[in-house]
Image (cartoon, rainbow, N blue to C red; front, side, top):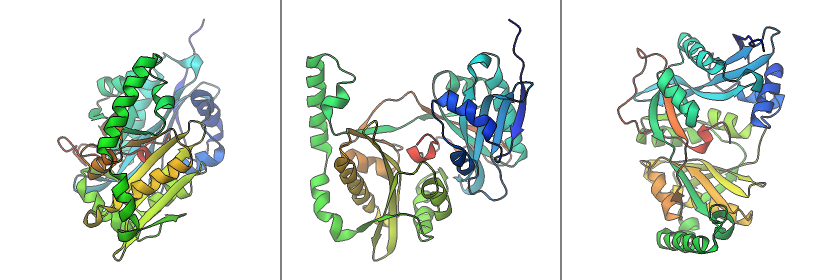
Length: 355
């Protein structure tokens, strides 16, 4: 068979129709043109998404790898960073070196566009390709936490043997019972903070971000403009957003989503003002009540072990569950930013475009 030919090209964010067919085929169901127009127009002034594609000589997309610009705190500076998204290849064009040429081409274009850094979530072959061939740095494994509500249903997927299932169930239930403090939190919730569901974020949330970000070396800017773009305006919808308030004003927020088909709850993002850190406990408690009412089987959350929120989640019976996913990072312009040694990087499910 004659080898199939292709070439690298770039598309503007207004031209998603041709790529949607590739993405929907590659991901099963990626989404609609409305999702495309939202996703590829994030709120970064004068910096556009770089949409890299491989196209055949009839101009049809047969591969994609793109980056979304994001404002990020990186060390002591605020820079334009980016997230790698939507790696897909048409099945007839796989193993032809598309990915190996597309990644460096897009990253070089990012450098020319003053996008200082790009991060990605990868596993297996993709992670190895990032690291070995394209000069990426491994930040570490994803800190994946789960809280099981229905032990039979969830653990039964991993333990077909009844004896193993009962043993695993007993161990997990004992751990949750020892570590959980939800009964004490329930009595305190209404005494210290007012937890309110919101449909959109006001600018007063910016103060939470400003102070909470001081705990981390690397974190995407989570101001009202970003949060409303990411969650309020997302066509996929279904997000639940709560804020915590006291006499000082808004001191924290939590964003969650329930997936009916999987009966899975997700805590996507969580921040609290350091001077009112206990608000995180009450926000988590509110989210857990919501998931229980939805009859969720389990709840998932990504939270760095070094963060103060990690301990809160453990107190609610969350367990760390191993995942093959890794956080990787590429410095596009070493003259602009440097990766801190052992960076304290704040990464949640909301920083991944799959949720």
